[in-house]
Image (cartoon, rainbow over all chains, first blue to last red; front, side, top):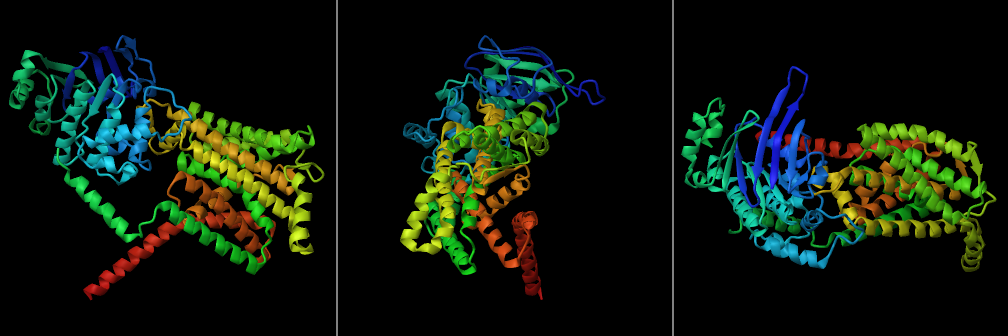
Length: 263
Length: 362
């Protein structure tokens, strides 16, 4: 469904600080896959998301989504098909606007904007139902400015905003890393519920081996701008965090900080 | 999933906040403030004998305040091109009336479009060449001077004997006022016409804007100023929203230019000088006095801010016997104090807290 074909990204090309962030990466993601991506800082995980989402354009290589070559689409055009949640809960929602208004903005993804009033009763009813399943009491605070909400609540709303139009692909960029442990668990549960409910294809970056092993059906390991391991099928079912660490230790040239391995 | 701790605490916080301020909807508070400000203004005006002409003047310029609010507060875009779009709007209006004999009412639309095109120029410079908004708008304001002069063909066009949007109502208003309140109102009748006509125009524009900011596009525009990354991530080009916002904002300034020209009875190539700082002053005065909570309230507050500014200017100038050219220093000082006030208040609070802490130790 999503195909990356020999994608290369170089930052500061031609200067002494030249970095190859992605070195001819190829990756095939199937419809309905839930892929977790792990790797040390600087492995190229976020750059991978940036070139899929269009924030950064690739130097060469192709990005194909559902038989559409989107390599040259601007970020906002790709956003019609791709939902994204960032690590920082502040990035996915708009302060100064209410919960309803944020969800309304998200529900217009993929169609052209009109001069119809932003407030529609049937939208309010739908948003209320969707929020009610979060069990956070948000459904009764539709007029609250999202700036008043906690990080966990904002991230829950961001998650709903990213999925509400059932995008073809959902990108989760360490979306629980900035939350307290309770809220993180809650958001992860919610992620699985929404992925199931909207039948989404998901790619999730995580620094937690535990999360990588318990969530999704496929693990991709990155290092120094390359995909160095890809675990799915039979193998994926038997993997546990300890094996995973062992496995990556045995792959040549892997530089992992201990912090990443132990978390 | 159970109700999370964090959700619990923020509900408690919200309850606390409600306990601190009486539980009235923000709209009611806004209305109360509005009435209080109006009453105080009226009292000052009648005691100090400020001419009601300043109300018409303030209403004529009110849309500049609204335009500045849209760029500075909604779009978060420091746009100085108002200094150019205001005189361009005025010049187009004056030229169409005096040279081409176009009906005054139609020139308002033309002035709005001319102002909007000025805003478009700033937006395109910013978006295509990635030149910072402040700089892009200075470039446009500089170039706009020539356009204004070329449009007018001369540095000053008098409109004293032309039919403006005010002319049709002057006789009726004079007869009504003299008949109802006596002969001393004869002098004020043209001022009253200005107030009524401008109130209708400005009120209509505000109602239109209030509708606009609640539409899907208006909502996206508001989001683009606060979180452009999110707007892009939701599939809309945030640059389009900057273009649209700057066009609306400068269109309003152009429209205000047309109103001002018809009120003053002439267009002058210099009349845009210092307009941006007046607009900023209006936005800040409106925010301090009325504390708007919604966009609808904010655009009303910006208009009221311009009114209060113009009235107090007329008052201060009469009381202190100042020169008309002193207006720019006064505007600058108003904006400075509005910007500096939060900082000074914070320092005062810090100083007091430290002093109290030292007192406890001793």
